[in-house]
Amino acid sequence: MDRALAMDNLHAGAVDRMLTDEQLAARAKAGDASAMEELYLRYRQPVFRVVYRSTRNIDEAEDIVQDVFLKAFERLHTFREQSRFSTWLMRIALNLCTDRARMRQRRQELVEREAAHRLAWSHPDAPDPIETTRQNAFHEAFYTALNQLPEHHRQLIILRDLEEMEYEQIAAVLGTSVGAVKLRVMRARRAFKAKLEPLLRAIGELE
Amino acid sequence: MRRPCKALQHCLKSELEHLPDALQVHLAECVRCRRAWQLEQAYRRAVAAARHEPVPICDLPWARVQAKLAEHAVMRSAPRWGQYAIAGSLALVALAASLVWLARGSQTPVASHLLQPTPRVDTPRPTETVPALIESSASELSWREPRPIQVAAARTNPRVAPQPRLRVPLSAPNPIRNAPQEPLRTQQMAVEVQMATPHSESLSIKPHDALAGQSAEPETGFAGADTAESFTIAILPLSQFELYNNIPQVEYLPIQYGTPTTTAHSEGTEYGAIICSF
Image (cartoon, rainbow over all chains, first blue to last red):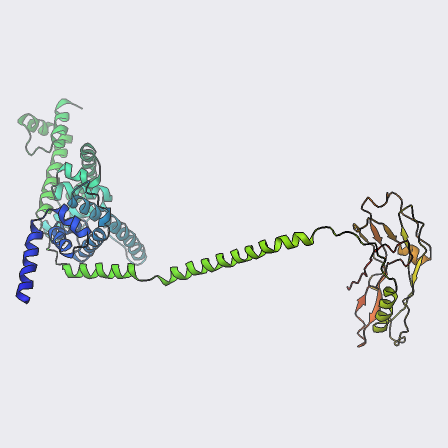
């Protein structure tokens, strides 16, 4: 009996894996838990990659991933299939990343304000290159500059340069045109380079 | 900006990995373009390093997400007692308001019926009730300083002759004559009350005249039964009263009865007593 049930589940899982995202979304909208699970297993890691690049913290990234799928499955009735499910899901992820970044920034400001009364801080933007290895300093400079960017610029750098998404895909996620995305990416890169240049000079990566 | 500089900017926008030889020569000459190209190269190295940085595997199990989903579903389906309480309270208030409104609506015809002017009955009121009331009041109250009060009343209707002065003796034996006299707080008080009498009569009561023993003259300027006329109640001297428990601080305005006793005023007119306390 158990074996038969397990075979049924296996067969159902195999069927689910053959379905497209939109078919799975339609079944999940009807309350099919296996379709939800299949969608979750498909997009857990891609969503996590984007979120992790934004947060650089595994626990926080997992929390955001959970919130992304909760929000997606609870508001699945609002998914009109005008875009791909992955695009819709990525848009939810970026929005939640933006919200979380705002909260983090507020918290960071409070912490720094409190610490400013007790400690004489060195400049937080320039990590000490002597105390870290060269590679670590390079990564640190990169993410320090990335975290100094506004959220909309940071998302574009992550989507285009780190995740290597196509302009069309980014335009679908952000709900805008390809030309606008190209322009925004160019501006984001310019701002990012402006933040990155002094850090790279500080660690000797630039003359 | 020179042409090679523009060409370099174009190459940077196009994300070219290698520059043409002409631009390589230009980089050796132009410091600005050389710095821009070096920055671009460093940026690309940083991006490549970050891109190839291993991203941890997400270990978040589906069961955890599923449990959260079920928890949220339970929270959404659970009755929200606070909202129910607020809605119930609002419904009760609305019900009470509607009941009050319905009750007032049912009373409105009765009230309007009651507000209809009743035909005047010209039955003369027996005047014997006024002295009886005076006697009963006097028996209950004791004067500290009895004063005879003269009330002069006159009918302003020119068709009727002026009424003789009404003298109402309110002198009752004071059993506490030796008690210390309290000063009068108010010696005189003038009160004018404009009233529309049911039969549009005018009665002028002049306590000055009443106290002086003069008869009141009919007021002029009142045309008679068709116009609203006024009573003038003036200078009602306060007198001190004591109740049976001999508390001297109580002051009462003496009760004035302005009902004429003659037949000329006995048209159903009723002048009530004026009772004040200060």
